Image (cartoon, rainbow, N blue to C red; front, side, top):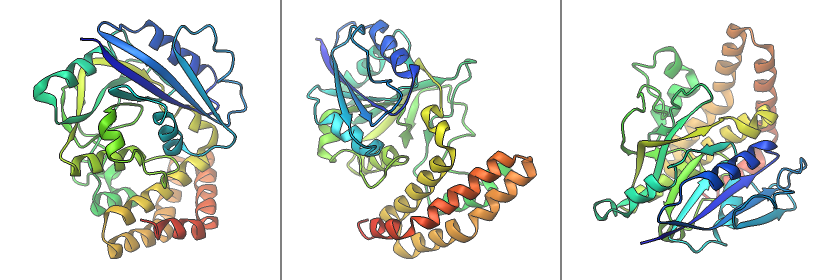
Length: 315
């Protein structure tokens, strides 16, 4: 039986990455698979990356936002245009291998895997190194370990929610697979109201995986196929803003899923402890560019505290 798949790609100044990603979709094996459409949601790019794609032999739908609405909102907007049984959220800096699509969908189609709501695959970099792309659901302790840098100083004792200690060489059930390649049953995505748009970027996929888990489903990491992932991608262009949005998302995640008192303690740590940890780490590395980016990130964070507090009240 042929299965339907829709692919959603959020684009923001991705340059040639987007074209390479689309070309890899075009070249991927589609045995017993019908790609109904590839929806590109362009978040007000200025580099022309979402233009002149007529030569790509795919059923493209291009949605152009007049402003950058954020990753979660753009994903949801793209998903609104989809009707296939399976929905793949794919980063533009990912290039699929031949069987990157068929193997995870074949896995989800097996009756014994009906409780698997999300599937991810093994991601590799340009040197063939396997990326550590799975995470645990974070706890307050894990957040604190990260803020103090303990997970880097003594990773065998102090874990973060990133599964960096695991080699990622076998398939297994995990709490979360990162959203660079995030294959989900569309019915579940709609049932859970998609990604939470309070997360402008970062942790929206982790939040969804947690809510999926609460609903009785789980995520599966598959090593039977791979895809190339550049990592960093377009966010390398805005490093201070990237850290700011990560900090913002961590704050909102804590208030959404932890007790208010715990989240408030973590907020205090984010504002008055973690900056010095990060600054100290930059100085020890001798990286003036990282030091400058860190200072700028926290300047943006403190400048946006009023807006963040408004978002906290919605959690």
